[in-house]
Length: 387
Image (cartoon, rainbow, N blue to C red; front, side, top):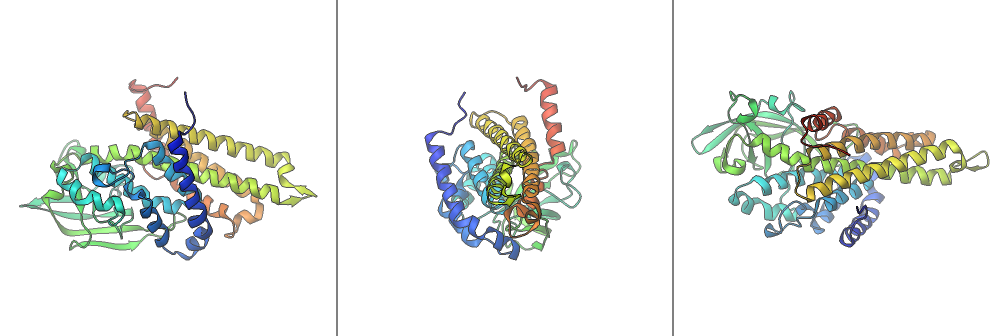
């Protein structure tokens, strides 16, 4: 049993960390506060080939292993979780196109998605349907050689840059069960009736936009049906969310790591009663807890990623990693703030941002209560086990 990164992964992590230290951390707080889009950082990610992480080499991508995939999101989130989000939705969508798309769809989209010339996201959530994806109301009615799409999507990351945007729709609203009538359609930017109506204000997760998208009689060619067969949308999305949850788990580890580093450094430099506060047992206990939980979250995330690399289904494993790591991120950011005292509440220190970013990790890619349901169903069914 090997709990260490291999030589290639270690070198890859070093490159990522160097980029974060030089290009992200020095500007993250200022750009986040001002609402500035991280254009230069995005260009750097493209130069590193990271927009092609989940795209096969045949189409110009990196096709990296899932542990390296986790490293990307861990290191980026350690610097600025919002930047990691720009790659998150893009990578999930690219994985879906690469896994489920027709050869024509792969040839058309993947090479430019790999370079970042095109970007993408995914249109799942609606005003009345988040966790319950079968409850979506967006429809796609076939008329000749086109689908006519009507509906509204919410919280769409990369909405203003996505081209195409895979959109989950109901091609047969009367199907029972509902998932048999669901499909994914690739909607290109600029299609008449496709409108990014507004940016949604958020507590944290700033940098990337999160938008409401309106589809009003949007006409899309039938060849943009992902995979070319109706009724496969739910399965396509759920398979993508397995890797998406590893991404969220890794981002959570990055937040927790940043909280630990900030708390440790501050405790060494802050003096009270004639000594550094790191000498007080109460502070030592907090730092020990943050460090231990962060390392545990990291290991469970790498474990889930390595299972995926072995070609196994990882709905339980990725669910465990996402659930545990996101809860660690929330607790670590709060404890780091407590160690900072009043300064932890100041926008001049990174822990204030971490505290705002962490809660999304318990919601994104399925709430943690849903994760626990997925985990328990896997265990009760006997399909998976622990120990």
